[in-house]
Length: 222
Image 1 (cartoon, rainbow, N blue to C red):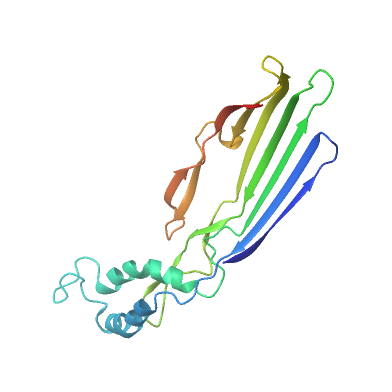
Image 2: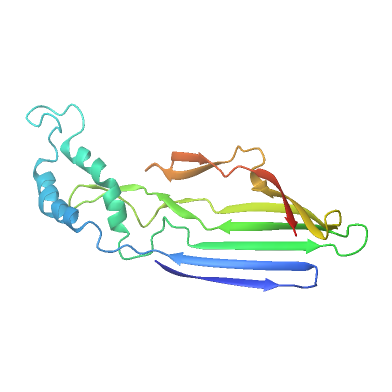
């Protein structure tokens, strides 16, 4: 894996802070399952070329279920997906991520002591599955790694409101209260994300998106 990360912080005024973060990562897989590769190339492919049409369970009888070609192909589909991406960037890893954060503190006037801020977090798309093709040479069913089904890009939103003041009851105590709302885009907690696709492009595995969270913190500095 390799990549880079850059961060820029800018304060337009004494009360306003802006931060921007960008990260890029690239993962390349090499030397994948060399022993399994040898087994597939030297044993299974020649075997399937000769006997792949036979029934998997009862090869001496008429085919009544999966033949050997189909059974072995189903077992190796994930292997061929990983093997097919060997030596090039893995599309199943989100390559780019961007974060934008801002916060403003009121230092005078009616809202003195209050602050308000927010954040936007963006994530790149990723490969969640592949169509299948039939290799004309071996007859194996292979994933089409050149044309993956891509999961959606993702944007998450946060916000916060805070208040800060001095408390003089027990000396000069600095009190700060803040309310944070995370994942505003999913307030109903109903967002579903497809994390894996079937070979026909339909959803194979889904999960709920990160739920919205609302929490309050109080900090006392003596």
